[in-house]
Image 1 (cartoon, helix red, strand yellow):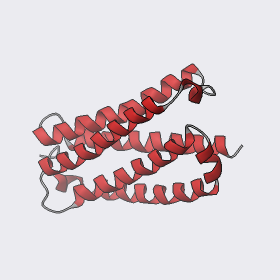
Image 2: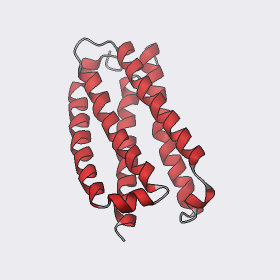
Image 3: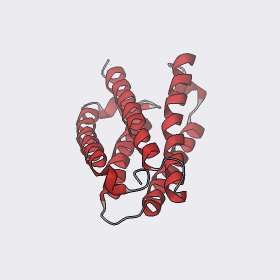
Length: 166
């Protein structure tokens, strides 16, 4: 059954892991060129670290799926650990922020960013649960998480590089 058989997803996760590895390296180099400005800003430092960790998560998830002989349950537990990490890290980051940190962002942008960040985390947790219980879409949901993660990380990287380099 494709939703719960990691062997059926081999090529997809080779592609996702390779893309994540390449983007992580490129982003690390790009951010290192502006590291001082990124670290001085109240939002950008944590976003930079979060983006790198998120891309590395895609790499680790891809590696986990490609380990021969793992069951969907085992992969679901591994995905769940990463999803829980990102859920807790996001919650802590939101709690840490002060209203003045958002002073430069419009209300529209704040709402869009909250929605964008929330979608992939909700899908991530849902994918983990689905893989663990063997119902609800499994690897199809996990595959849907990847474009959201790549998209969100691309957006954050673009904001970092364009707003910091001004």
